[in-house]
Length: 212
Image (cartoon, rainbow, N blue to C red; front, side):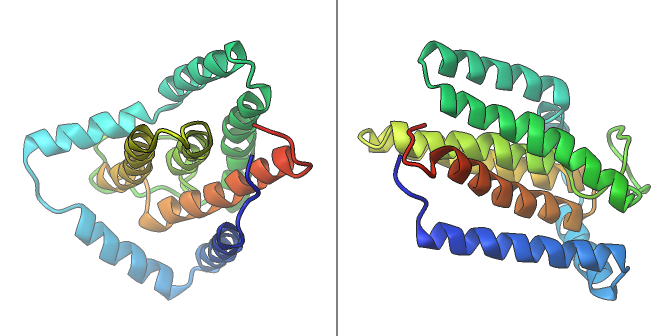
């Protein structure tokens, strides 16, 4: 497995610092957080057709825990059968550890209430960070990492899979704002923290030259 590049580490530490800034702004009720949220909500939640609305609801539903669990189990089964045990462990740590336990701990520490206006789907628990967004980044981010490695000699398939996974990460986050269950800064926080944890997991599993 190639070493994590200096550019990737720069992005990772930048994401970590931005997450802390986002966290600080939310917990101290900074005015700029409200400005960002209001601006992006107005941009995302524009009047659209019923088909687009249903599409957004379908996307956000696909990011629910039940769907994620089944996708994760399928990926784990494929990787174990292929004897890619470190890759399977990477998926497991990302989804069950960081996105599951870690996200729950932060939510209960911050205790940010969810938006209450114009909800299109039901949601419980606290708002920050967005569980759907951090899970999408960690799960599909891991798929991107593994695809870049395993399909290095198949550029067309590599580009298609990485492109689709990247789009899905973006779509899940946007859908959470669209359906009214998260503020944009919740989604940004989920993406930033997810990317930071994704790099840490990859580094921990490959730092001694081990292969995924």
